Length: 459
Image: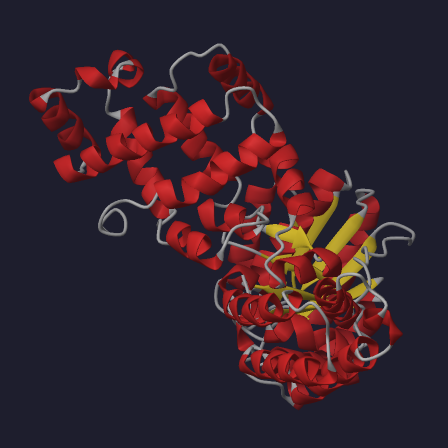
């Protein structure tokens, strides 16, 4: 996430943090680089100008000159201003209304609005223990209603059926009445998207807003569209009283222009960001944590939250005890670790949040195709339990049987065995436990998991 911006800013700030003292001259040079980095990240020009002016004002004042480590003080200023730019803290959903609290979802077609409805419904169900109903008022896009029904089933929330022959306003009224009858806490209304902003779309969604009287009107926007995302959000905000923004596809956004522009241009907070295609791929947007990630400092709090929510505690505890006793890390353990990493969003998502890793280490880990985890798991599943416990038993005939059973090649199997040995070394280092050891181990895994030749071949 935001790799290009992170690389540019980290390089610039490394140079200045090494200075024994700061002068107006070296601050100016660094600010020019920061400005260039932000513009290349597709951050809106007015946003860049105001950001640089604020950093300059603080940097050339008493704040830095009195510091014992002026370079680090400059870095702290940049981090604080990035955080302010995106909003000082996470703004929670406002659900203080007589149930059902209605949440209206708006956005252009293709932004991932319907998927986001399901992700947010699941998030509310799991983290806030709310009962949730979803309804589609999109009567134009083929299969939109069916898509939401399928996603609602995955999320385990109530789906209210609608029909393309109905008017969107009637759908909203009926859904609200049914949600009241069922004592549902939160009702999501998914609206129709368009390929571009038009009067008909704005008129329809304004009418829906009047009928449903939502407590939250959230604008869903594709982060990869950069500052265009902020401009589109502003156009919607001029018509609708938006209460917040959700950035989708944030994990695919190497630039970060949308995250840094939306708040400034619309005046509305970013409340969530979508990461990955899975239905649990949604994170509350914390400006302080995102600022740390942009500056290459990682995001340990989000990483810990991921571990708390998505890691199987019993399996993790069992493995920890096994390693502590000095027992061997076998292929069955390796399979469970692959599953845990997939649950946490894959290797790249984990390393993105870890502090202290260079961009080269993250890049090396990024070469691991997370889809290859499923292929590795298939190979291990084709082994007997005895073979998983004792990989040294794998001779030529056993290897041929395993590759035929998993639809893989001998080269794939040999790569897997090599990676398993590298993981064994990591686990030996972790003997004795501790969070620091775990982090160091995972850091080493970034390089270790890169198969020779750059990964498993695509199928």
